Image (cartoon, rainbow, N blue to C red):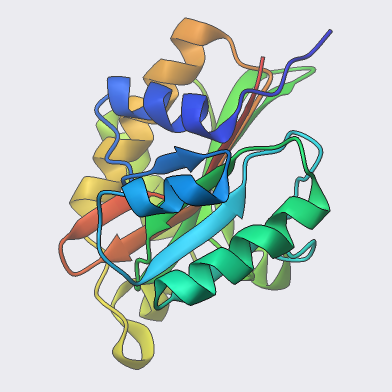
Length: 205
């Protein structure tokens, strides 16, 4: 039977494959918020396999500015799933991207890249390949995206480092092939001024 990995485990696996990931700290009780090792602002989300679309299901909060707001957010998240741990991360601002993979019945494992966050279903701007892929394939996938203006730094957002994005795609493809995952979603993958970081990931094996 397919198993959905916890978010923390998924992010740790990405890190093992040299895919840059956003820092995180797992909390199960409110008092553990005082042990979070990074400064505000924060993002907080449920690490629950029962929730797929965290934004729509109000299972993720961003731009949390202080401890009082963090305590309130913790309580709200616990109402969604009292048994699930809560993941705390630094709040990152930038261009949201998306990497995904599934097992095609005819062709086998695939990988795709596109605009992330709320744009995934709105714009449906993605590029897909059957694995394995080369670094040149990854670069072409990025060039195939229609909304290049977003990658170039749209409305004050940072320009996306497409070389780094291609390398992340290549490393992700290696991870998929070596582990034979059924599904993988890295969404969002946030391109900041300092680089690109995986913020959330869902892996089914």
